[in-house]
Image (cartoon, rainbow over all chains, first blue to last red; front, side):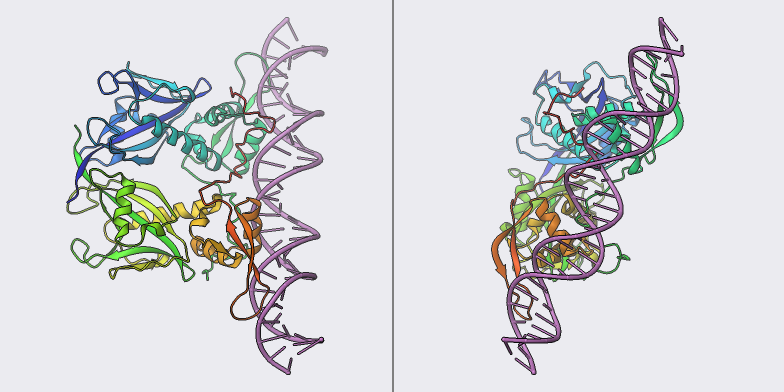
Length: 232
Length: 232
DNA sequence: CAGGTTTTCGCCCATTGGTCGAAAACTACT
DNA sequence: AGTAGTTTTCGACCAATGGGCGAAAACCTG
């Protein structure tokens, strides 16, 4: 039928660690690109779908169920992206909550997203695409649920969001917006900080831990009277 | 190295025709799915990237330069998505302006997106994904430039947007929003309708014919004073 | 209980979108 | 020419959403 190519999946696993957005990389021991850092991933078996292959390869690096979110980002096809042979690659975005700390193999480590070493192959492209995707979605979806702990204070959430976006967000706005959008709700509990004083913070959680989008995208909203009537 | 698979590209070419959103399909003559409608596309040669393969296969159906926009949407990998053999498929969204009317081969035709016949393979999934993508982008990008004629009246634009979204949009809002976002600008000319009277409409064009996003995504905007300072 | 700290809440403002109706600009007919 | 009909455009008004700021609340420590 058509010519066939090896196909690999690559995972861009992001998390917030020490107040910074980080990506999971492992250091290659062998050529090509020996010594360079690369994304976890690998080939796809005959009986696997892409996401299954991803899970399998990822299991070698982190517990797969540490991933609170996973979505496909893009497939790259440059002919010489791998010097050995032509390999197509599909990249995924994966998110790990900031309070989950998987034990990593020796060759694997978190790296600051905004201070990456040169990566192997075209993996740098995958990282930037995934980071862009995350940042965009942070603004109009509740995807932060996959980066924040299950229960959290506004200060914590602010830290996570700030780190992921790369710029400051005020606690006031964050609270107002997230609650107005009905993304987060108080658990009822409250949390005192360990050291120093300060009013105890109310504990929040995400109402819904599935991806939901908000559309303040006015322009294009059906008119009020519209009982989902037929157009034209 | 890794097992290899044939890989195909599929094009979901959308346009607005007769006030409705339509997709380009061709009717299969041979098994499997003989008689069913399918998306244009095909295999990827050794020396091609995905987008190049797409252009080549599409050339058999429409003039490739009729496409005002093209973007990758997703790669599907279900093991039995093709009964003959395992084939991975990457779907693209393509847009043709409403005033461009390519001559189509005999087996090819436009179909109403919201009244599709059963499609071959998993092509239906590709169509819905592409339509969703288009609708989302219509709201927060200027992607309408790829659906509307180069120069247009507000009435025309409204028709295109209404058709693509599937619900009504008021002319007043459309004008205000699109101009406020600096997406469209008057050409200076004006257009009288053929029949009937009526005030002549001012002619507009898109300021920029490259994809630009607007982010009314408040929550997450850097504070005003922020001279792009370091976070932390 | 005073001082320091952190969180929360309320007030005010700017921007954006939604609705509606009047005015503008044109054609056609008497 | 004047009037009726049609389509577009513009302005006024309203609602919702964010952003900024400062006061009040709630806690800890000495």
